[in-house]
Length: 349
Image (cartoon, one colour):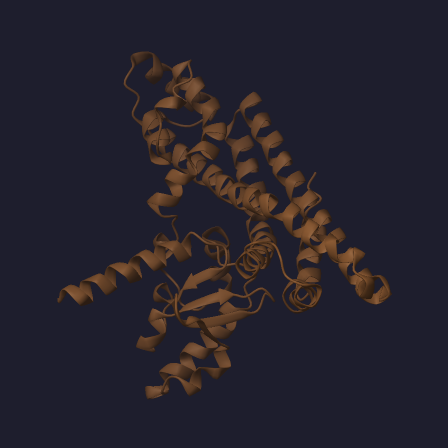
């Protein structure tokens, strides 16, 4: 293999990992497609929350996106391979988010022949990035086993699980036995519990980090929109002013509901440690998993819109005409769908 080919392979692997770490990009290399060229492409969500095939992306040309139905103009249908793939891509297009936790559930429902569930993992870099979020969830576990706070020694999520799964003190082993008794399971089954525990809280950490980024972007964006209220033309256009006010209200309502969901998860997590048992953990795991798809959908929708805002208006400037055009063409489309999803499942209790 030439150096150039090796470099391209490494770059593709890195791009696939980054895609799997995102809410809105699906590397088609993991999907059972038959058209070789499509395996190099990505399916993405645009700001209007439509699914598109990204055939290329670079700093000069930007992103080359086409609708799945337009692929006949780019690939030959050799032996019916493209026709086969278009059926799969049509099903994938219906997904609201491409985060790995939603994909683990949704790909089973789509029945597209996907079997490589082991590929649906966060990259090591992303897991390390989430360590601070994970500490809040794993601190009770470490304290229960070690009787002290050892979390400052941890630099990667994997270490947290290894620390408890392979304790180096007799006292820790004794406490693990007690944990097994509380869970009504054998000591040899505790590592499996730890794996499930780590995965469910890693999912919460992942989604929480996505929410935190959105919450850091939202005040600036809403303020940017509110600046239009004083514009003479908009003051005399009640319909447009109402659109702006409605969008601002929807964004605040959606984000407030999302924050409430995570506060509820924290509350239930504390309840688990107060009344630890296999049943209480199973109940908590099922609760969080039941919210994966809807949380992914809402976060994905908000993320692509706010990321595009940051890209188009990096200095948060732009005249009234440009701002209105962007709001009407990129922010408004699909926002009602996000709000509807959040309203249906956001009121956890």
